[in-house]
Image 1 (cartoon, rainbow, N blue to C red):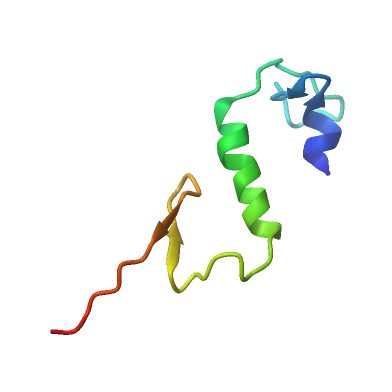
Image 2 (cartoon, rainbow, N blue to C red; image 1 turned 90 degrees about the vertical axis):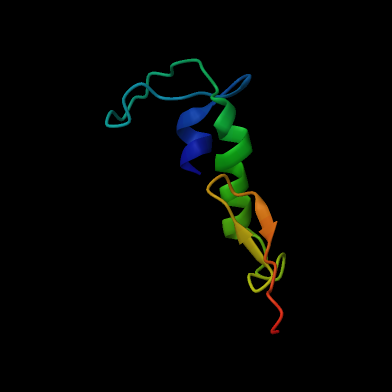
Length: 74
């Protein structure tokens, strides 16, 4: 809700110059990581737990899912 309230502008989302003020001053820049990372993290946080099994997948720091390769016993 805060992203919508404070960062949404007519053409998308904008950064805020000073997050400590109650009247935000937008910097009029939508950073590339906003869509690729921030929204992906939010999606993963609020999606159903069975979307991807955490027994079979791990997420890197940019929230890309990577399959876990299980080693077979020799």
